[in-house]
Image (cartoon, rainbow, N blue to C red; front, top):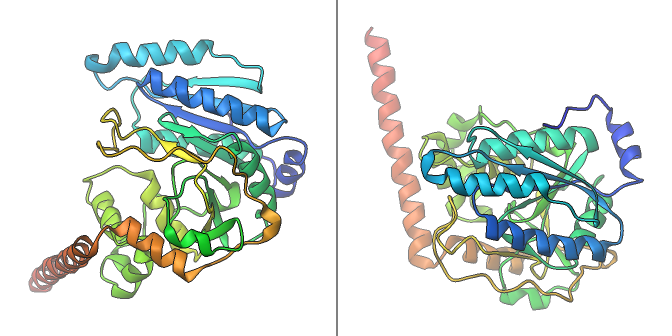
Amino acid sequence: RAERSCLTGNELTERRRFMNAPLIVFAYRRLEHLKRCLDSLETACRENGEKTKLYLFADGCKSDADREEVSAVHEFAANYTCNCYSEVIPVLSPKNKGLAASVIEGVSDVIGQYGCVIVVEDDLMVSPGFMRFMNQALDWFEADQRVWSVGGWVPELSSISGLNADLFLSYRAECWGWATWKDRWDRVDWGVGDYRHFRYSVKERRKFSRGGSDMPLMLDAQMEGAIHSWAIRWAFSGNRNDMLTVCPKYSLVKNEGFDGSGTNCHERDADAEPDRRFVPDLTKGIELNRRVIKDYYRFASGGFMKRNYRKCKSLIHRILHDRKAMRYARKKRQE
């Protein structure tokens, strides 16, 4: 387990000038997915030129049903080496934490030592330019207080052709190959203490929906215990801080988790391969392009019927909880 650092922000920044950001890979029970993910990362690290430190987090088994698969991943992670990394540190959990707890604890430990981190899950394949872009963007946008995180995955959007820059700003914090800084990570309230205000606020729900109409409902599901997601709480904190995610106009990541093997990803058509030639040029600037934002919203929200279904569901959800809260208040007054 990585130890937390007591270095100050200035010391962390000075330390990182002489090294790449650390890379974290989270794995559970899918050995073949993990091998393909690491193969792609090896190529990306060699393309980047400078070595980085790899933290390989492997979660524990839930029951006897997955014990054999998890043991195979643990054995592989414990013995994995590659000369493209300055050091490989396996972190093997004896018990099952779940993805949400694993990411929150793992990122918190590593980011405390280095001030920033690059995060990949075992079902992702990255392009050769992924590591170079992530490290460049972490340096380039560190002082830009508009930026919450750096994303590596983006959908194929028709409006992208209208961008003059290689980058755009998004209201949606992506979790498929991403990077961020300690000062952003430390702002997250994982308990979502202001959820009650958000639940009943039309204005706040509409604001959070800019990244997709599914986002408020995912936060509702998280707070009601229906799902366990670190990503929706991470995205919500970025929204509350009025910050955005930097994205490349062409995806540098492919998600292979939609083959039915993932815990949170159900079966669907596979993503397109990431562009193997594309490495974003940060000097061309960055755009908050309204056409791209609208296009992204439509992609994330689904078709017209699905978007309106979610709006109705969100309204009904709020009305039901309003009535429940009113009955509870009336009962308390009577007591």
